[in-house]
Length: 260
Image 1 (cartoon, rainbow, N blue to C red):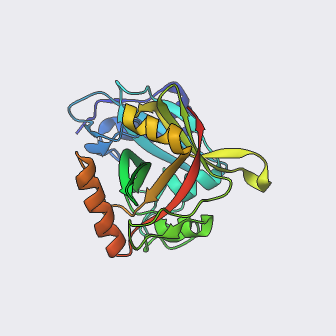
Image 2 (spheres, rainbow, N blue to C red):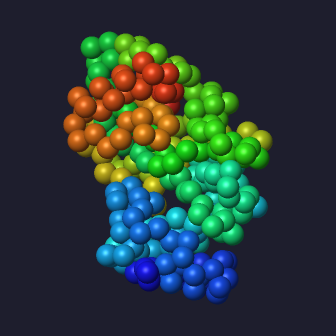
C-alpha cells in the first residue's frame, strides 16, 4: 500500500531512485513507526512522514519521523555512533541496512525525570532503544546494548539506593532550558562527540533544570528495548527502573551538566 512518505532529493540521491520508488510504493517502509525526532508513534499510512537517512563512513540507516517534526533529510553521523547507538540489523539482514528486505532500525528514546536517591531528588535521563542493538560485526542475534555501554564505562545497577559512579569524558548538554545531547569522548581523545543528539531540543521541567543546576550532575540510566517503556509519572518511572535493575537490565553513569 502506498505510504504518505516525503523523500527529499538528498535522500533520493543517497539511496537511488529504485529504492526511493519502492519506499513510496510501500515496500521496505513501515506502516507504524517511532518518530526519530519526538519518539512518539507515527503511521505512514495516515500522516505525512519524513524519511531520514543516517549516514556514517560505511553504514547507512533509514529512519522515519513525523513530517511536522523534521523534514526528510540526510544526517551525517560518526560511524561508531551509527553502529553502536542507532542501528540494529537482524541476522537475516545484510550488513547494508538499505539493501535488507526488512531492516530493524533502533533509535534511542530519551526520557527525563527526577529520581529520589538517598533522600535527594536527582535529575535523570533514561535511555532505551526502540529495537535490539547488535554489536558491529556480529551475527545480530543477540541484543548487545548493555555490553556496548559497559565497554564505554557504564556500570550495572542493582539498586536505586546509591548514585551511579561518574563516567569521565561524558557530559549532558542543556542550553536555554532544553536538552540537546549526551556527549562522549571524541575519537583519539580529541574533544567530545555526540553519542545521542536531539533532532529538536527537548524541553525539561523547571524542577529537573533546578536540580541539575544545583548538583551540576545528571544521572543517565540505560536499559534494553522493552525494559522501561513510556511512563507517564515519575513514580512509575522509578518502579520501572527498579524492576529493570532487579532483572539485571539496567546500567547507569553520572555525568556533569554542560550548559544551564
